Length: 155
Image 1 (tube, rainbow, N blue to C red):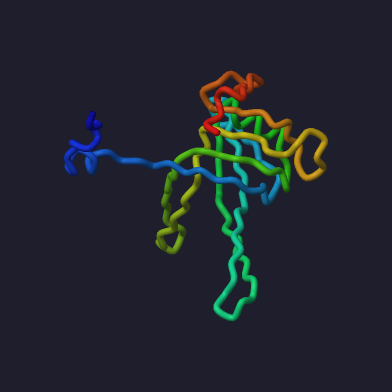
Image 2 (cartoon, rainbow, N blue to C red):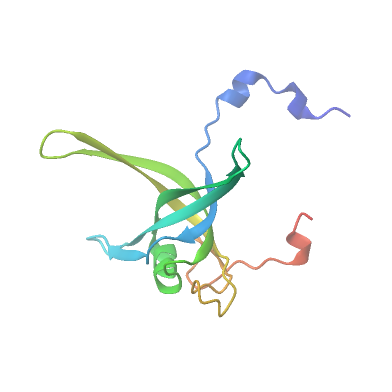
């Protein structure tokens, strides 16, 4: 039997958009929690991801990328309460770019990751972060981590 996917036309595939970010890294600073005028929680934090490789001479090179992140509502309060500088986390979200002009009419841009899902990767009692290993989502009630069993794992 031949899968239907084989018969998909290129036009149908190209018509769909995807804005998805998945990162594993460490917080570069303590999260900064604020509230909008209407009382909605929003937290901002920076996250570092790194890579290592050997150059043509065989020397190890390192590069760190910094990502600006924000989370809203219950997830914002969870991030603020449980994470600190150095905490290791997994985040899923989407890119969002804002722009503004300064007093000299120069245009500025800022691209952030709007976090929808977050998993704390530090083990309990780990001094490098305050995580408990829970899974959290902007759509799940605060304090209700998702549970994963061995049956849920694909390997």
